[in-house]
Image 1 (cartoon, rainbow, N blue to C red):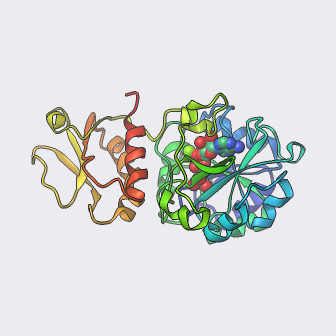
Image 2 (image 1 turned 135 degrees about the vertical axis):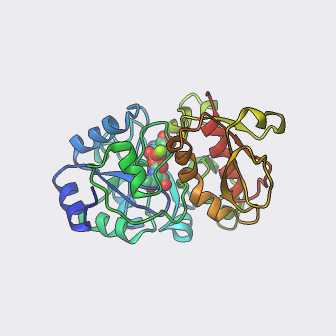
Length: 312
Ligand code: TXA
Ligand code: MG
């Protein structure tokens, strides 16, 4: 059910959950200070309670109200990338941030989205927790119809059209003395070099006693179809191919084009739409052309496809 921005604001203020767009993916929003709505988000998504939520703010100053101490270069990072697809994990003052939202961690992730509708709503309602608006484990929603597919036609959605980026925010964590990437996303690692003075490493969440990004431990982005990732010998077994427009694939297969090998931006924008299309077309086995660059945003695209194919 599509709702207006005023209805979204009213519902959030009244302690309800609504879906709304950001520049990365659609989010399921609740006001940070309405515990029942925050709990409802976990229930709706089927999300484990040990997987914390990102707090979405309308300015850097909003973070200062909750933070304990800001890690070095926090301000330089927000100045360079906010509003935008960057989430920064920061130590907080525990009594100011409900434990449920941060899964009892001493930190919270903050992001200022680069989307007019989202920013208007946050300015009216205050900080919002917003996980991606999909059932846990499924591809994120990049269009209002994806949200309705997961949560039903009556679920309230503020429709902002297709998301410009199509991939979630990149998440940075300060692991003294360096910032590290705990989730690759719409910003690629090299973009941080001019601000940080070094190339931030990607760390695997499970290598730490306390996971740096709990969400990375769970299954993600997966369609119902089995994905075969880029082994040429195995294309025979597939009924679908996810490929690129410059390449030729066997004509007996249903080919879904992810885009062009020359431009990762539209590939990112369409990725979850195509994974969801496999389900709509009842695909059983899809072969994915993984023969592409790993530079820049392609690295995130490859990671999402690998995660989507894991554990099937
Ligand atoms: O682009 C995005 O980030 C989207 C849009 C809606 O803003 N949101 C999003 O939220 O992707 P979600 O909940 O699907 O993913 C948030 C990730 C999870 O993997 C979670 O474990 C991690 O952020 N996270 C949140 N708070 C954290 C914290 N305090 N410490 C470590 N990881 C945290
Ligand atoms: Mg998610």
